[in-house]
Amino acid sequence: MSEPEATPPQQQHTRFEDALAIASGTLLISVGVAFFTTAGLITGGTAGLAFLTRYATGWGFGKVFFLLNLPFYWLALRKMGVAFTLKTFVAVALVSVLTELQPHFLQFGSLQPVYAAVAGGLITGTGFLILFRHKCSLGGFGVLALWLQDRFGWRAGHVQMGLDCMVVLLALLTIEPWRVACSILGAVALNLVLAINHRPGRYLGI
Image (tube, rainbow, N blue to C red):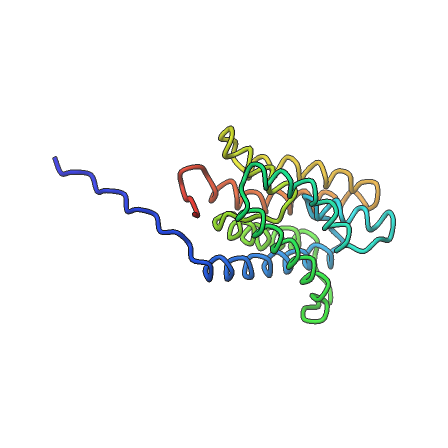
C-alpha cells in the first residue's frame, strides 16, 4: 500500500495578507448591510442591536456599534489574544466608517426584500468568513461564536445563527412582520456560509 500523503504545513498569513483580508471582508460586510437597510431589513449581531437602538433613540449607528462591542473586546483579549483583539478592533472601526460612507458610493433605487435578504446575507457571510479565516471578527457575537467553537467545538455558524435570529425577532417591535421574516432569511443565509465553510479542522487561518 502506498504511504498516505503528508499534510503540508500551514503557512502563517503575512501582515499584508491580514490587512488585505480585513479590508476586503469589511467592505463586503458594508455592502451586505446596504442591501439590508435599503430593503428595510435588520441585520443580526451587535450591528442589529445597534440598528434597533438607533431606531428607538435616534443615536448614531457608529457610536452605538462601538459601545456595544466594548465588553466583547475584553472577552477577545482574555480568550483570543492581543493580535485577534487588535484586528477585530480595526475591523469594527472600518465597518463603522464604511457604513456611514456607503451612501456616497452605492445607492439602490429599490430592492425586493427576499432578494435583498438572500443576496445581502450571502455577501455579508462571505465577508465574515474572510475575517474568521484571518483570526479576526466583527466583534460582538462573532467573538463569542469563535470562542465557543474553540472551547467546546460548537460550530461558529450555528451559534451565531441562533443569536442573530433572536436579535432579528426583537425587530418585531419596530418593523412589520413580513420584513422580520425576510430578515430571518437573511440571517440564515449569512450563517449557512459560515456553517458550511468554517468548521473545526477544515481550515485554520494562523
